[in-house]
Image (cartoon, rainbow, N blue to C red; front, top):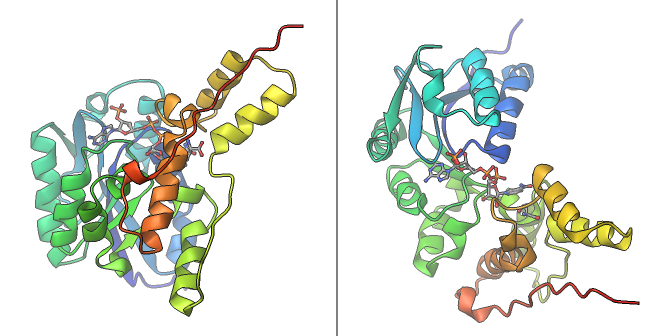
Length: 273
Ligand SMILES: NC(=O)C1=CN([C@@H]2O[C@H](COP(=O)(O)OP(=O)(O)OC[C@H]3O[C@@H](n4cnc5c(N)ncnc54)[C@H](OP(=O)(O)O)[C@@H]3O)[C@@H](O)[C@H]2O)C=CC1
Ligand SMILES: N[C@@H](CC=O)C(=O)O
């Protein structure tokens, strides 16, 4: 007998680049698992830098899986979200109207089923939207590090209701770093030092350079494999690691900002003879 649906989770995804698309494909491929758990994830909207594709009636339906799959294919091929209009029960809103539509959904769904706003963009522009969503009782999930590494007040506001935020992949990608640190803090044990290799890109680049490959080629490959930030200079210049370190420090209770962090730039020396 099928498990009854106990929980419907409406989701709005901000950003459908490499990470956002992976998430959508994962949601679609895990439907049987969710069904066994009595959970239904309903993707009601997907936004990119210029527009928002949203289900016709966010209260009762989401974008269907066929449309989500087409959306991933379209964005992978470089087509805009508008190319999906007419392919399913959806509407398209361009910025800045799109922002208002997300707030409408957060206002109404926050009061009823709840809404999860998932930020897979790489911009500071989502911060005010995320804060508004928190005010409306919604949950936020972040892969984007920027909302947690800007003004300390923003960090504080977003994590103020810790049950309503998840930001695991901001620091360890797929590794449960935040979960581990949070559990240690909750246990009352002190954390005096965190040591780690915080950049997948730098790890990859260094290994490939050791194997004698060309720096420019290695960086291009890292980008094509989706390891780098949208701008790889964020990885090579240490900013991405600094953001991860700042999130960890703030989680440990330090009220510091980016200016407190010493970043050493990666220097590549070419040895002649
Ligand atoms: N790559 C990785 O292994 C990991 C990445 N992350 C983080 O995930 C995030 C996404 O990375 P990635 O997918 O590689 O980046 P991409 O550049 O591939 O995708 C970014 C997406 O965000 C969209 N976007 C830009 N501005 C806005 C906005 N104002 N509102 C809504 N969407 C917007 C872009 O729109 P458009 O398509 O129009 O350009 C694009 O779809 C980054 O913050 C990164 O740090 C976290 C863990 C691991
Ligand atoms: N660019 C990052 C990806 C995730 O945060 C990295 O290289 O580790």
